[in-house]
Length: 412
Image 1 (cartoon, one colour):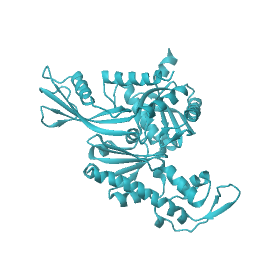
Image 2 (cartoon, one colour):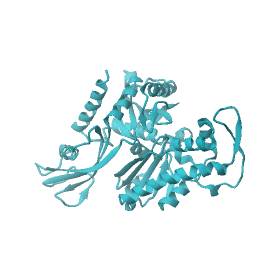
Image 3 (cartoon, rainbow, N blue to C red):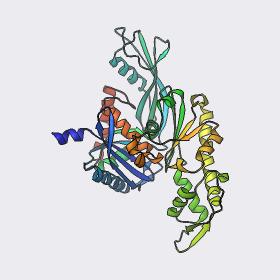
Image 4 (cartoon, helix red, strand yellow):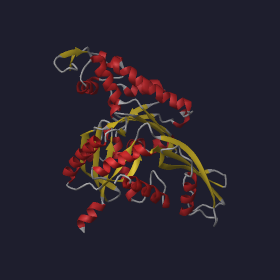
C-alpha cells in the first residue's frame, strides 16, 4: 500500500526535443511542493524540427533518457506529461455563448460555454490540443476571469484554441507508448516554458516568451494572466550549428562545440582575437578560426529569427501586449549577446529566463535548457491537484483523453 501511495505521488515530465530528450521525475510533498528525485537526458535521434521522423530511433532515445531518470529515482516511469511543438501547430480565437438557466453561474455552466466555444470546424488533419479561456462576459457587460457564483442570464466566453496535426501527435504518442511510457497529457512546449520562467506579475502586465530550441523557436505572449498569442518559427539552434559546419567545413560536433563556447550574436562583444582549433569535416586535420569569424556566421541567422518575431508582432498588432518586454529561454538563449540583440531588434526589454526551481535544485536545473521540462512538471502538479491549466474541465477533458486513447489503440 505504501508503494502504491508513492507511485500515486510521482510526477513525470518528458520533453522530446530535436537535440535532446529530457526526463524529470518528482514526488509531491506538503504545501504543493515538488521533490525532484530523478533527472534523465539523452541525445535525440529520429526527431527533426520538433516532430518525429524516425519512430525506431526516437523510441531508443526516449528509452535511454527514461532509464537514466529511473535509475536515479529508484522508481519505474509508467506515465508522463509530454511536450509537443513543431511547424504543424496552429492557433485561433473562438467565442461561445449559453443561457444561464437558474440565474447563478455554476461550474457546469462554465464547462458548457467552453464546450460551445470549442465547437469549430477544423482543417483536415488538425486536432485540438488546448482550449484556453481568455475571459468571460456576463450579459454583454464587463469582462471577468472567473464567473462562477455570479448572476446573469447569458454567459459568453472567448477562448484561445491551439491545434496540431493529428499525424504528428499520433507519432509522438506512439513513440512514448512503445518506449513504455503512457502519455497522461500533451502540452504545447511554449506554454510549459512560460510556466517555468515567468513571474505572476509578468504574466499579468504582458510579456513575450521566445523559447529557442534545437529544431524550432516557440513564441508566446501572455497578458492579464492568460495566453494571447503563439507562433512557431522554423529557425533554431541546429540551423546555427549547420551554418557554422558549412562555412568552416568542420564536423557538426565541433561546430556545436565552438557555438556553445565562443558563439556570439554581436561582434562588438569580443575584445580578444583568440585562435580556435576546429576539426575539418573529413576528420583528418585541424584548422584555426577566430571568434570574430564564428560570430559573422551566427549573427545573420539570429538576426533573421528576431526579424521574423518582429514581423509577427507588427503584423498581428501585438506591441501593446508586451509592456514587460520579452524573456528568452531554451538552449539558444545561452548565446553570448542574444539579450542585447533582442533588445536592439524588438525595441523592448529582454532577459534570459531560467526555471524558477527551489534553491536546492538550482545547480542542476537553473538553466534555460530545462525550462520546458520543468514547466511540464509544474503542469503535472496542477493536474494532480485537479487544476486543468491548459485544457477544459469536466466532461471535455474526458473527451480529449478518450480521443488520445483512441489514437494509441489505432496502432495496435
